View 1 (cartoon, one colour):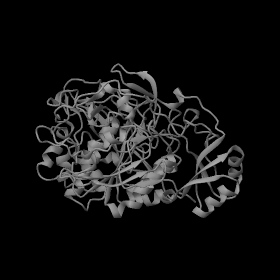
View 2 (cartoon, helix red, strand yellow; view 1 turned 45 degrees about the horizontal axis):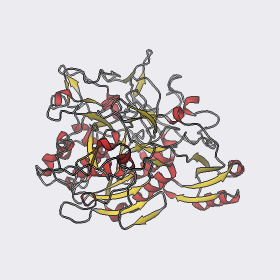
View 3 (cartoon, one colour; view 1 turned 90 degrees about the horizontal axis):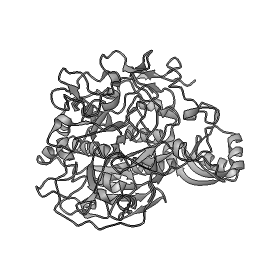
View 4 (tube, one colour; view 1 turned 90 degrees about the vertical axis):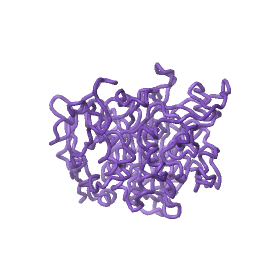
Length: 579
């Protein structure tokens, strides 16, 4: 009999849970940037003639045989999660549901993240390269001066591709840093660059590893000497599917040893469909973490409401990152604030997410002027090859870069070690009296600090009480310490002062500095064995609004499927207001 386990602490929040794969609409924010909506609000559900699905369970041969027996077509093997992607008609899908065998069928639908444009309205002149502030905001520039710059560490970026720019493909000494380039949308591998038609992947990658230095001889990235693997899982319009992303993760898993992949950056998310352990994308991410790869994912851009963390950021093991902003005054830390678009926890299983925040407001990175994003929004393109964006995608890339610095300095660190040190040395935004300016469900352990994380001696403070082997085997599952009181507020059980406190943006008198370091042994990071006695009230129950009903049942014997093209999605976290 399957044992389900959980350990949790309480939290106070309101709102619905949404993973970040958002649909970008034609609406614009006050800053002129497009806004994001949940797909259910912006797209009509349609019933396609063919169903694109992920079939999971049994051996690979058995899955092939089952799909072929009903006349369906196997598109791709997803051996990392013991699954295949397939295409089926209505009748074939019905026949597969009735086929003998313990199969689960997941919808492999996609989502649009933006509309495309056709031309660049004007050509921007090149100018002298400025110094970009985000390396300084987290202390990475201090480490660069000490020779800690990411060399020897490979970071895989699963996104929309990579621009053919020497600053991205080469290290500062002109040697190639691009270990491999893979197109997961077609299943091909390329010795050269797989072009980034959309622009998001290049922007994220340049935050991690851009070899260009400013006029003041400071690098404009966190780990300028790190190696990169570019895996394209999103197209020219920012679209992606579960199958493409899982296949991308599978390629990273397979290349881990040969390419010394230590970190994977996931600046995307999708809407939650199930408990984290039942989600096929989450399962793939857990396999990478167990294999020794530090997985860094974005919290999503659907904040500030609680329970808005996306998949795979809701996976308890991995590092999930929210965004803060310097309020356009990098030299003055007193007015920094949590970006309101940054998604907040807790997760449905009661885990506190994000674990930390990093600079994600108006971050400048490299992007071709011909990329979709640059063409559609040329007013955010500057300095010839640079583009300014805000989002948890950018914050995630900052943390991926810091992880590379940590692993260069201490190659023997496990993913749990990296997570522990990052959390133990982060600074929570607090008022002068020490009270938190934001809840742990908004800021986690606080703003990352690269210098302290690299030199931290902390160990054993992350993922306490979790068992990833049991989780993947299905013998035990877990939940976090979040609770909800009778007034609907979330709090951390047994920890005073860590409830939901939606502080006003840019509120007075709080700071992200050495005056307040979280060192409470991360009691809120402990986990409980999941069991049926842990049930949220009606606002937390998977109901019609979350497609947790007869049309999408997740249990030991049921098949899970939906005809909607918008209910299970994966999309890059493209736009947020320029905070």
